[in-house]
Image (cartoon, rainbow, N blue to C red; front, top):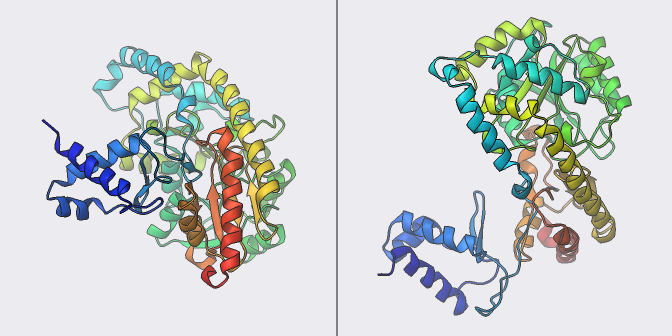
Length: 452
């Protein structure tokens, strides 16, 4: 007997074959189609999921499902979707099996710890191992100052709400920055100042003016492969930022969540220029291991240890023991170091291909930032062109990019930026995708009036 969702799939494919659904066109919403076909919402969700597995359709977060490519015979494959919008790690490069072994060992080794609550700051064995591992990125800190968190975002979310020893109450952040941090700031209605980061970095005169004239508690910065610009500060710039923070009694949160991917071995974190506690160092394992693990690290000054511990306990009591234990085994075994060395080469190649494609295929009216990590990069469009319009236009070319508007605080918002990541894009499609983006920009420029 034919399952209900199979009948739904046949109905959608009939509409495609008859031309009632066209390439790049959005499919009916799940709720609308369930009413139209008089079946459950779960049936439609199942049908769409199966069609997505066959690469007949694809989903865009908060926008719905779209038809892939042009209609072709059943003997040929639809055009391949080039997805620059997904910024997660390449699944084929994630150490799932290795980590599974570590999880199994952790269940056995840490079984006693599972019967009671653990330390809010993390397993002692893991913090000792992290203290050793962080030395590879020039962060020297004792286990007592290291906190294991549920992804670096948890550390950021807790830190911005704490009182700091300098008694100030305003936060300064790079603009643009990643949406999760924007959400943390706006949801708490905090006082915030922004400073623009471009392909030339930040304006240090402007940064000093902000530090001098405003009550800045902390400056939030992503020191390497910034999201979304992909920019990495030089050692000179990092040292300059630390010096300004020392001069004006400002703390720094250095989010170095992709520092492990840096191939420049002489690149120092800001923490190295002031390890006393002025610089709070955070990093995540999401981009290099498995995002679902939600594991991160924060190196805290002694003055914030008690207040952070209380806030962490109130938030989740402690990070899950088994995932912590598995990470400790993974680090101790040497598997992490070997894995990172492979990833550096892999993403470095992608970044090289991306920059070459930018130079060859973007029109002179557009600029770009970053790309070296293989993760984040932005394209600056002609001033009157909106990123959202270009993103919508590129769907018809089977190319997905992300409008970067939501990565700005409202006061500093710019609408002519798109973010790209090549972390999940096949090498052979990077140049082709950028070529299509260049075509899309030229086509919208030619239309003129549709840019605004």
